Image (cartoon, rainbow, N blue to C red):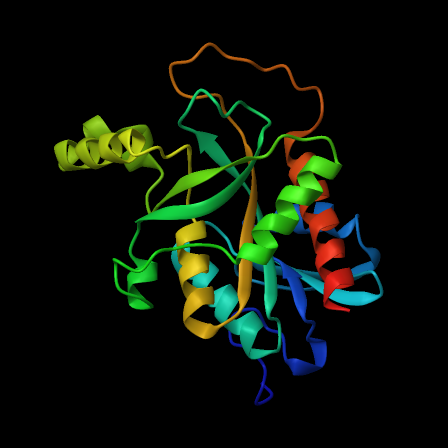
Length: 251
């Protein structure tokens, strides 16, 4: 292993880029790569699958993070160590509010830290927020493509089933009380990585934002499965358009 080879993503500075997409699913990497020029598979190690390609003449990496905060923090840290300073997460979320429908583009502008990894970087009271420039660029990109992005508070959690089946857990009362308070405060969606990557980015001084697509209608609301387009494809298009705008602005 070379001195600069990163332990988990298995990339070194010779493979570096300034920009990266960081989806959760390894399978999503190939679908994102199809939107880049001269894209190719690079490597795979554990949950970290890497492709590379070009946008606006600039090299862009695509590295999956797996599910949840610990592996996402590893990906962000190691990408930063080889020179990446601008990252957009591409993922999915679940709706918690009737204003967010299945298929909507969701851009978190702040995140409830209902997880533990972020607290290894910054105190609990420090807010988990995206880079403002990236957030605004994602908003513009979504609008350019004809979407009405939902910008609001997301909840990042560590466990999928303590949300989906909270009443079956020994700490059900605590979980449900916290969840209710977040909803009353205006939380719109939930996912599993944003608080972590925002906190890591703040602590090491890089730019990160998240682009999500809601995979559900709000629980209990009448289903509105009215979208014929592939939901994942639309958030990929938004993130790619935003990254193009970022690169043009940086130049």
